Amino acid sequence: MDPDDPNNPAQRVHALSELVGGMVFWVVLLGLGIAFVVRVLRRSNVRPGVPAGWPVGAAGPSRWHFNPPPGWPPTPPGFVPPAGWHPDPSWPSAPPGWQWWIAS
Image (tube, rainbow, N blue to C red; front, top):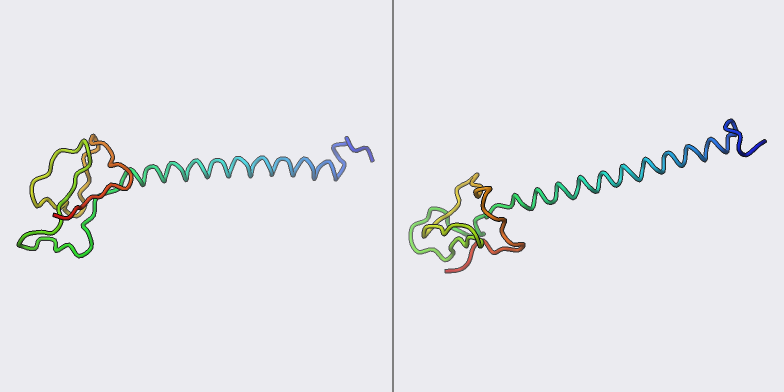
């Protein structure tokens, strides 16, 4: 059989393997791109949470206070973000590893 004959089974298998290999490459590349975008979006949506053991709404002096990141407006004393609170989108993102709560 002629190796360049398009009806040659070996030639067909080779062409199919090249096609599948190319498709797998692009699917993996697209998946990595989507994963990167999702990670960036999830990291930019980080909200401050109340530290463990924080007595929300408890009277008396607190041991912790909210620490707004650079570029955010100052918060009033005793500020605790309510459930579902999101920072203003025009405010800059907090630096990576920002400590939202600091001991008083």
